[in-house]
Amino acid sequence: MLIAQLSDFHVTASGTAYGRAETTQALERAVAHVKALVPAADAVVVTGDVADAGQPEAYAEAARILGGLDVPLWIVPGNHDQRERLREAFPDHEYMAAGPVGDSLCFVEDRFALRLVGLDTLLPGRHGGGLDKRELLWLEAVLGDGKPSVIFMHHPPFPVGIGNMDAEAFVMADELEAVISRAPNVLRICCGHMHRPVMRSFGGTMVCIAPSVAMQLALDLTLEAPSQFMLEPAGLALHLYEPLAGRPPELVTHFGLIPGGGHSFPGPYPFADVVSPV
Image 1 (tube, helix red, strand yellow):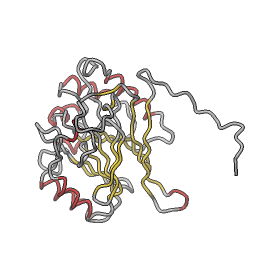
Image 2 (spheres, rainbow, N blue to C red; image 1 turned 120 degrees about the vertical axis):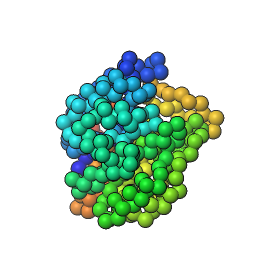
Image 3 (cartoon, rainbow, N blue to C red; image 1 turned 45 degrees about the horizontal axis):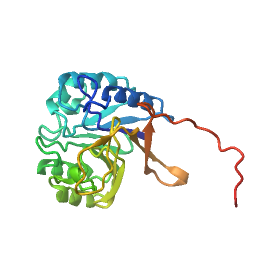
């Protein structure tokens, strides 16, 4: 099973965010890249910030582009998103219309050998995001049967060392970590929000943060880091769940770059005329 994780589109009505990032074109390139994957993805999960400023036109454009995917799609919101606008733009996503936890856009998908769980970490007015007790109780119940699971959410529940992103803490991070620590069947937590590939342990499992498909955060590992972005190559995360080399199924995460937007990556080329030193 192969899951493609796309994150942090920041689509706008004009097609450009912050005066420089051509986010609509970036999303189009990302979808084309996913469609060309070999082997093909079995699922795509979007980890938030679909639109930059909640404009209905931006959500409609994102829905049009994502509609080009030919595999199942799930979405959790980010701090730039508006739940009702997401619901309006993606009316065929039944979990949005009748979510399992109040107004939150959480989901659980059990059709695969690996369970997909979506957590809605959007707290309006809070950049750092978080959860509430209802979501935590729901999550613990979902994970209780021991089935291998991967959790998708926008906000990472911990600081990463970039000052402007760490300024506001994730609400109920300790409580979430306690739930995860009691669920060894959680093979990975997959986040967005940081606009960079980042990895860290949490609650006895591994957290992978996907890069943005549009723009990357400036890599400034200081408390004083200002809020700035770079037009570095776009990226995505690929989560492969397979029995590799005769072992039981394992979850392996790869980070990939998406060509375009001024970046090209020639190849692949064979390793020709290589002599092994052994």
